[in-house]
Image 1 (spheres, chains in turn red, blue):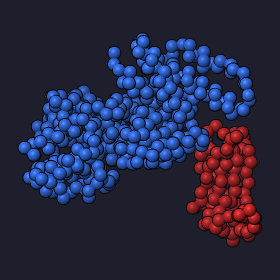
Image 2 (image 1 turned 60 degrees about the vertical axis):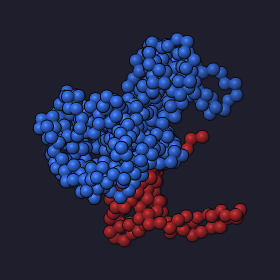
Image 3 (image 1 turned 45 degrees about the vertical axis):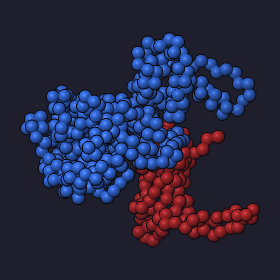
Length: 116
Length: 400
């Protein structure tokens, strides 16, 4: 089954000098985890995302579309990256998801892909 | 031969669990079992089966295979698809294979942490023990449509999110066990409530007895698991004494001890001692200790009510809530007098034991009209037969 692991973290934790050091640490852990998932044949794709300040949202309403500078919702945590994996079941997906490095307050949402 | 309905109810947990484990689909398992039961009725009328469970297992397995194929055909959206090849499973069905016992596995599926906590117990009771949605709604004080929705949502999550149909590895036990324990406890509370086992919980006490023993065997280092197994044994040991000759419930303090099943008590004692040896107390251990205190009447001739109140005082801290509070109030009534018991009762609630406890305490305190009123409120809540008889007698005594 394919699962999307969506990584939500408080915005701004990787800014500044302390943030940069934190980022280096987190990136190293991501690379190790990604390597392990690739070797297990679980990894489909994955990436970090640029900050929400770069986001543009298209809103469709009443048949017309407008562009909005920013994410679809202003929340404390924002989508910062994802993995797409293919594993046997939810427990395996959860085991990988638990090991995703996140800062305190970070959340990882595990969602199975729809099958048609 | 026992009736077809009873034979079906007895077969249900095992057959549904085996089907669900094999097909990894709870709805399919339940539907296939229901279809097998419908098909059984006319056949059994003509010729009663030698082994009803084995008959239902084979019939339900075939129904499940058919349903799975229809589903696959529909999915592949090919018209006039050729009949599927017989699978190895078909071949297997030709054999008289024993029905695999998958109930423990199914319990872990239903108690998966990815399922909302409030849904786990209901789902387990529905799928593993075969309780009706209506009975579950009553047990959990919910409207039936809401209960149905809760169960449907949980099943959908299991199917769509890919919850595995496996007993988890040891590393995952601590997280998974607490959910399983809570579920078994709720299941047992349902069976215990019905002294005569006349309702839909019939057979359920034996289920929990067996499952709790199995769990204790699998996790000998988990004190709360051992304590739950002890608790169920202590309570079941008194089962024969819980009814009088007329089928009315007998309260614990007045039960005929010669009818208590001693081997089961010793089994429970051994389990509870092992649980205590870990030095980590928990709600199941306290509950088992309370049952044990009642059983100590065997040795001393009297029930140690003050000690039981002490145990409840600790239990209230670990597990606050109306169930603990009502039981504690009854114990306080015995230890310190009925007025103290009434004062300890939690605020009014729409729950049979609350009304029954209040009626008892009011009668003891000599408040006859109020006690009668409380008894009528309790009787209006459709108690199981043994409880009903007990309450009716109390009402007659007070009215006469």
